[in-house]
Length: 260
Image: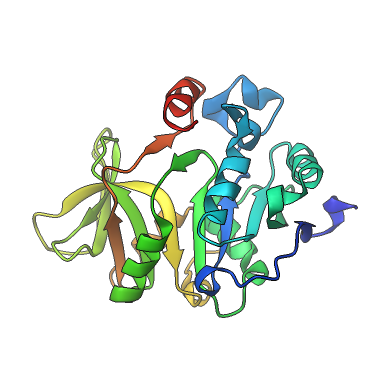
């Protein structure tokens, strides 16, 4: 299979069962993993092991728990290793589609937009990052989304970080703040906005693609901030759930102590 000449391809099992809520998912896996050296000098971060399972496999199996077996994986850094591993393992039982970013890594926003034709037509879009492990109950996140009917629902927690999203008393997103640099972007005059840490698990309505104001290489954070003033974007607080950002090698041990 000549993956290089194809923008996308199917790997693994084609699912005949209906996907939960008509949704399909993307696992962002294309990053360079600069924080994860020296592993990423020779491998993609997505194939780093936690108790014998790669980060990618763990995220594929996480989505399977909620009936989501139609999954897009975007690839760039050591893309061939990722594709070969997915093929060898037959998608771990899921229908995995490859969104090929080998020509240019597009970040999360650009990666989502590039993959738009691979999602189920008219179905909700769910995204997660390959280096985040969590036991967030995805059914509860989707129920929250259905109850409040926003354009986007962001999973967030009260954990400590340096970059926060800012929400009002109704859980509506209005801005972003970097507490290390002092930089912030806020689209309201409201005071007493609450800081929440981003879990990188998101539910989008399918019309997100027509509303995205950016093209090329860009972050989803930029999309949220550009749309927040005119569109309802809500935070779903799942504080208390397990969550590990496996963005650095030293966090592997933490992840292994939490996720068997």
